[in-house]
Image 1 (cartoon, rainbow, N blue to C red):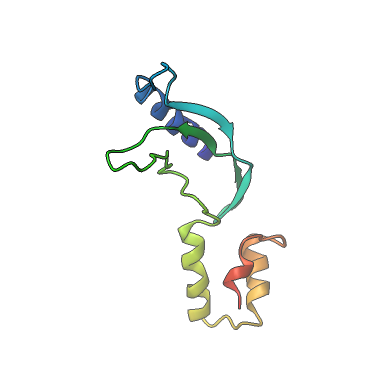
Image 2 (image 1 turned 135 degrees about the horizontal axis):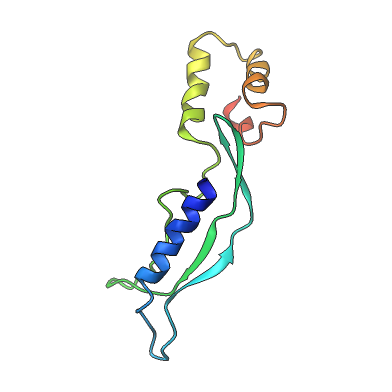
Length: 120
């Protein structure tokens, strides 16, 4: 579902800007494949997504490049907010540093990638 929502967001963005063209008549906003797959840690487990690439050659009035920014999938997102909120809550509930790897494994599985930076 997440992948479909991201694809729909891009499918809406491209046609909304299809009339913008350069001096040669080429469209300034075009679809350009996908970024490599990445995994996002969620409360229901890891979800793999492929973010579509959008080549946007437009420039704003200040001379800055305009880039497509997904409102659904922010750049560098590794885990959902609910996961990040859970970790401090576990510590507050008395999970010691030594017990945390066992709790993490019980909640997210043995290969809970992307959570190692949360554990000191």
